[in-house]
Image 1 (cartoon, rainbow, N blue to C red):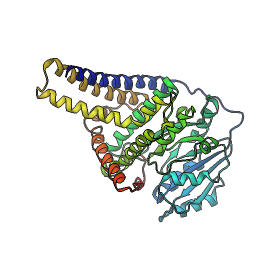
Image 2: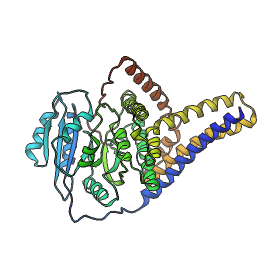
Image 3: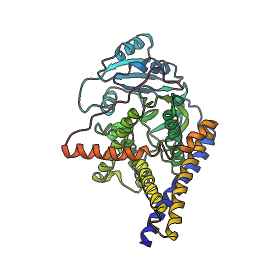
Image 4: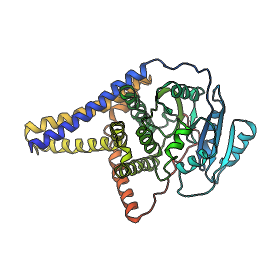
Length: 409
């Protein structure tokens, strides 16, 4: 029993130290000045906006695309996946008014989802790069220019990854917590991986890739519901790099209700479970270069949820004197340190974002006991849905995230 608990505690401390190390690297990377120079020539870029019934946000999105400041050739393709609302009317109106915006009707097909739509877009463009923005995104004017500069000036880079910020962060308590999660896990941890190991992860939006590299990879896996995570592993397996560019920002909506949040994150976790299964079947994912990257990316949520679940169990058992004092004290220390590390990362992100207010600090202080616990439900729900689909031999349908009118904070 003593050996078992030594192994458990070693696992916990290793994870806590790992996340702390990433946070330190992320802070250093975020505080550095923008390291890239202007280019003599800016290569051509195609922007893809996959859309299905996105009329409620499409006008603001296309206005932001038209305001992009890029010195080279820039084309914007609204890829309409058989919308039945005003998405088509808005897209056609903008395409008539602005030469860089093009409305494309995507032919019906299976499987449904973002990956199939993006593969269709890749079939007809001839630019050097393509850039993906979700239909609710409003990138800042310099975002494309900064991503291209990073990709062109980084050794072995085939693209770049920007920063996704929450436009409706002040809507309610849930959106505040989602925004803080993004600041930590989507940027601080991402920046830490890039600073220490030159590892970048695609975020699904605000991501730039070379068209030739994508063709060499065979396009998107149309059955991957977390297409960004799946593609990241294949990029890493080639030894290619994706620099992280915090200065290249886009703003997007996040779920404003628990029900929409649970559906969205269930899809994300199902996608990561699919990726985990695929990685065990396809050993091309695993080599010396990608071992750390693959384990880190596939298990970002899984390791975190396992850590959360075990720390809760051990904490409760310790309170009821299930273990001896010699074991109880270290277990309580693990639980306490889990909270400290999690909350310290949130506070670090708030400082970097200059978002330290009494209310925000209070929100960050309770996230471990509230928001983080939702991932226990999400993991159970995702495994149940994925296992059921595999047993029935059915493809899980793509679940589009619901948008809201007027998503600004």
